Length: 286
Length: 252
View 1 (cartoon, each protein chain N blue to C red):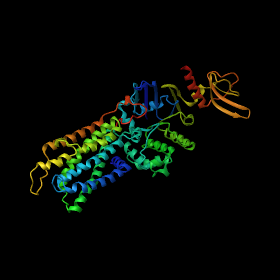
View 2: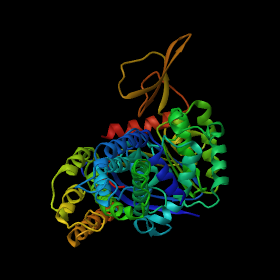
View 3: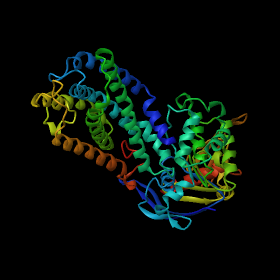
View 4: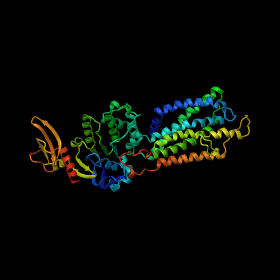
């Protein structure tokens, strides 16, 4: 069992940019957490802090009750991390790169483990291929494979499905879900579909602040009565169009708003609607 | 051991190394056949003085290979891979030292080619095969220069990777710069002028002797190099100063 406690976390870069403001939350295993937020919301900074790649300018992160700054080695021995952008050694084959990473992770029975992650990430055909010959999606799969090496207790994936085709995305969602049965999986994305079906907890973040922390159902519930259909688009005032659908009866607009305009037909919100509503609400406040 | 094998493989199995290997081979042959075959300072071509002179002529190209290896530590690819490797439990200082060891072994590999060409040249042209004495000029010339430039490369690469490439032409210039014996890292002045100041020995040429000041100078270069390597590898980058994007040359 792993327990991560984040207390009043703040991060301001030397440039003066405030990336995180007063973040507090607890993460316990098993858990599959979706970290949602628009680009530049602070997700990657948060993940960098969780992986001890950055030191916070305020607050603390506790790993099993002890400050992370003193337990960096312990964290790293239990961590599998896929950063948003990363490089691979192009001159090595897929198998060699994973062998290299397994050696860095200090994995003893590495052959079995490499075979397992190759199987799980569907790289069997590419195991002997040089990394420079791989497509973007295949490179992403190698990145995911190295994170899975050693069956770590904490898996952090920053935008893991970028570059993957729809079939692969579904397969990886299921893989993350399977892994979350006995560990913590933290999945950062701005693609709602990726977290909709698998995450049991969602954390929405924007402008460095937590806007929402709860289950997907709770997020959907928060948008009830704020999502509607409009048959003819009015001047876009006080609402946000989330979809434009061409039908036989003309164009229908799916909208989210704090107060739906006159004539809008209230519909059941989806997770995407709820997320748009949440982000829009935050935008209105600012 | 496995990590070391991969680091060495990454140094040796690339187009830069293959290209420099070919250039080293051809240049070695040219220096032996064009300059060393005449002997240095009125000594035989296979005297330790001539052999030392040969090594000092070869040093710039060997050191450029070394600096290429160092540049790999700060390459864009390396910076991007580091985003993953730095989240592993492997001690980054240990990994840095391991990489420096792999660079040194890479340097030894290319030096073996250069020395091999000279030994082959001696054996074929002069039927001279008593190579056991050659170890002293090899150690005296190659080791301090390797350590010194590895240390310099590690430090300047940390400041900015482009400085490593700027150092490369300087290495060539330094090889031809006249220096006092004690400071002559490349040894060209020492191997050319020292025999002329010595009395003739039993073999009709001055015996190979290395003055104490030269030993001190070489030891100082080696010690500075080791200090810079350790400093470069172990000094921590301030994590609070980092941004999303990994800056080039933050650490190795």
